[in-house]
Image 1 (cartoon, protein in one colour):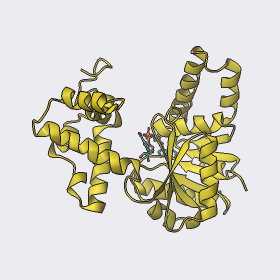
Image 2 (cartoon, protein in one colour):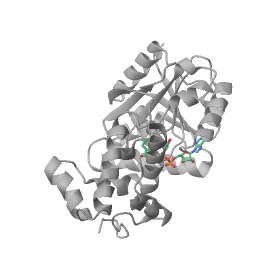
Image 3 (tube, rainbow, N blue to C red):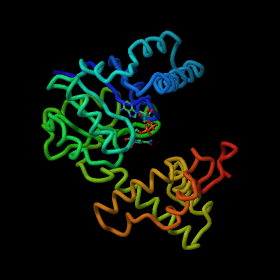
Image 4 (cartoon, rainbow, N blue to C red):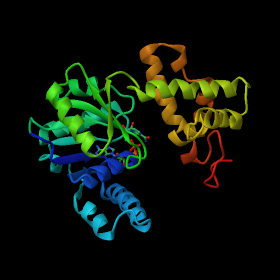
Length: 288
Ligand SMILES: NC(=O)c1ccc[n+]([C@@H]2O[C@H](COP(=O)([O-])OP(=O)(O)OC[C@H]3O[C@@H](n4cnc5c(N)ncnc54)[C@H](O)[C@@H]3O)[C@@H](O)[C@H]2O)c1
């Protein structure tokens, strides 16, 4: 049966983007947040993004209203019971993810497919604890979800091939380009991106080049839209440290080991753009 009704758990940075692209693609979406304030904040983010499109003439006010009309917010997980696919985009914590899927097992029929948007946790570990391990996949979107073309569709050794095909078809309707990945830390994109970013920190840490030269080198020499240290400030130093630690723990390869400077900066509270300071000073909104 094709996916028609979609549930999303979490309406934060990623969840709100996922809700938006699903609704824009014509799916009926129910999104669950922990309380009314978090729900209002997430739905407000969607409204603001769509209003930006109206202001720029990319969509009409009627089209915006039609998209919002496809979205239902709730604080009750049981309201996701009628969904064909539930995408989990809650906090990056394995205990929290297990809790969400256990509650969904009580609310959803046996056919409902579960997907997690996790960046670094094991989909296999999540799937094994559910009552439907063959119907659990990873759907790894990129930030900002409405603008980034890619989604990684992640399979575990237990994933049913028919489920994978259904999820692939769903992702393509959003429309996103699918990269198929196995359930290993970092999947495909972060497996390549994280060691590159960590190496950029090492080049800076070893005094081989200034941060501006490192960033300009990759921007102007390789055509990247931004340099690795600016990118790190956007992603978050704390998030990157967390992912690197998980990858190093799994692979035991030095290239995944977080450099001492990254650890020190995170300890200092310099988490990047969101905290006002990372490799650059963001207090004015622009990197300095
Ligand atoms: N931020 C990124 O660039 C990025 C990219 C890809 C994947 N991810 C992954 O997406 C997930 C969400 O990340 P985010 O950046 O959106 O985080 P976020 O902190 O912005 O949002 C998480 C939201 O989940 C809500 N939440 C927590 N527990 C919940 C529950 N039980 N039910 C419903 N809602 C709940 C929180 O209130 C919060 O609003 C994480 O697993 C993260 O690793 C993040």
